[in-house]
Length: 241
Image 1 (cartoon, rainbow, N blue to C red):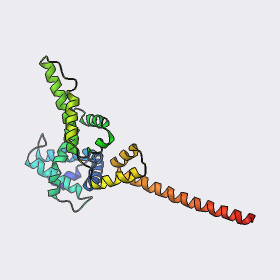
Image 2 (image 1 turned 90 degrees about the horizontal axis):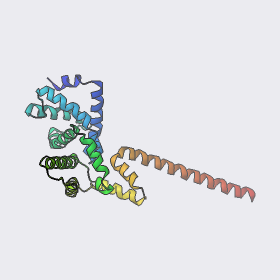
Image 3 (image 1 turned 30 degrees about the vertical axis):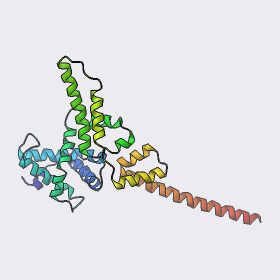
Image 4 (image 1 turned 180 degrees about the vertical axis):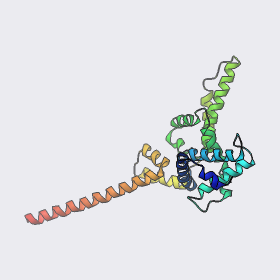
């Protein structure tokens, strides 16, 4: 089965997920933003299932599956960046695997969101990649499994175990923001933007650009109004004179 035939069999809903994947791929290719990575999951799921069907595989394993999955990802990545190549897709394979893992059962995405909500803003902004998201959720699952094992053995579970494992994981994963991200945050801090606006900007730069354009338009309009008011005031003074 060729890529062309596989593409023809996608439903309208699946094509919509793939369109979103393509747009998010453009974003993550230009920088690390976890919210964009996570929004690639539905499209990745479509491509993964198609690759499994092609390889007649029940799991995301095997040479046939891996080769077709990479080829399908490349096909859609090239729709937004014709410079991307198979080697680059292979380098992103681990990130894609972690995203698909997060989408599998046990409400992992809900767990991730809950754990991110507990973090202070500066630490949350550093959780920028799928591997970091994976490690946070895996720490929760491991701690829960350890607690369950303690109960089965008749031991009193350590109520702080989950917290301690997560704290250790968070301390380990201190990925520094990129120079672009750092410059963006510094610029907005100088303008006294609130922390909530800062988080919004970090998670959705496209909307932030629209917001910045709107602000510039408002400032320009305010300046025009001020000049017009000054002109009218000057005309009024001259008329009285």
